[in-house]
Length: 328
Image (tube, rainbow, N blue to C red; front, side, top):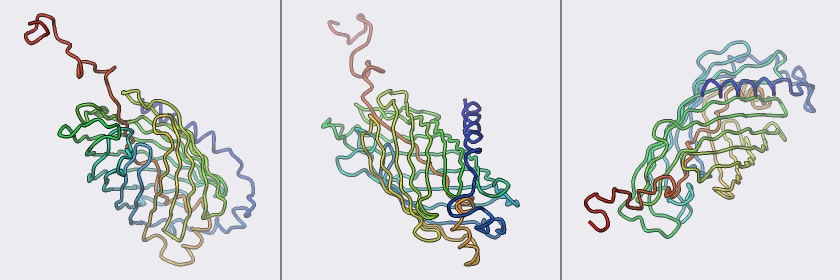
């Protein structure tokens, strides 16, 4: 399955690669001086902090992360990007996973190994990355009025992810697949089960300026519980406030989670050692994208009443002759 998904993402990258690489309104690659940039001067390790408010199946969180270039060539880079986040409790009476409130605090992790490269005139950057994400989760009460006090349980979810990306001075594309592994359904309390969601999506963005990017995306999600299956849309606006400081606002809608609004911020230290190199990197989205943190790192979780999947959790399903059965 992973081989098929990877092939699909490669096909997506191949499809978007021929998209217009013509001279942009801001000028050609040569006009911008991008050909004179040495990647070894601008592709440097970075480390810092990130935080995000809860979204559709994702938690309130804050943590540390880092980007490490493993090998930098004339037009390419192999890299490792890792994150560790503290996950906090949901807003009161506003479950991020539909019914059950997430309680704090747990530590989630995310890792990505990837390869990015520039085309001949550096007007496009292409990339592939893949990795593993984990999410322990504590639970509290419910938003539905069902009293689960004393039956709350902790759960642990995990997934593998693959991603294909393409970035020009005007456009950016991101295709991704999040695939839960291990125990994908777990009891959260006596009434609800939680399930990690398979999510497949494509985001298309446009650089209004080199610092301001707006995107719209489509995604499909499904899980074994079946209560969140369906399609959704996602809009995002991100602003590069200064070198290494980026803030974003996200709005999503699907039938399971309804409308969700969240915000995130990321700060990274390190990078180019000179002011001139930092300026060139920031002014050229294709170069800047070489060291950007990959997106879609959260294990998305939903919950539901699993009566139709496991009715014997709620009804007596034993043999009529079994001791303790009605009438015995």
